[in-house]
Image: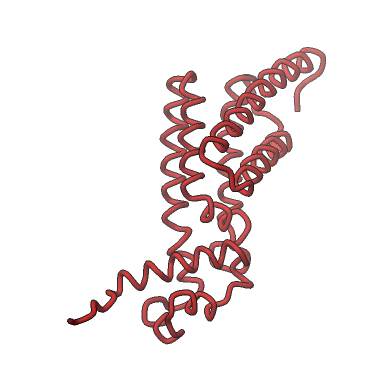
Length: 205
């Protein structure tokens, strides 16, 4: 009886799975190709037959998730602009997506330093700043202070990061995300009222 020989696609997928775990635990700079190959029962020579470098393996892991996240976020952003009541459901969809790709997201946010994708975190934060700025501009009828937007995005990022690091169940993740969203929404409305009141007393920066 002949044994089935693993196809290149099977081997590639094993390396991607092992690489995801390695980058998640150690980050790109400290990740070891030897450990990745050992986890798959492969030699480094077999690795280089499928990937040109450790960097290419990382890109194969994070690029699809980053691209899907960008497309999904832009779609939900447009949807919320057309229908503000869709906000809670949009937050839930993003939380579910982040949950399904928890390791990849944490690699993007904290494990890409030293790689060709080390700017993905800044791109993520920059995109959030654009969305926050747009909403505040519409609510205030003027552009908000860029430093205020950076601070609010930083707080939002910390919340997302902590939830992902918590290794919660999907139910817990959705609950914590909904609480965080409600807290953020309430704080946003209070902040808008405060800024408008201050603007009546003195020009807003």
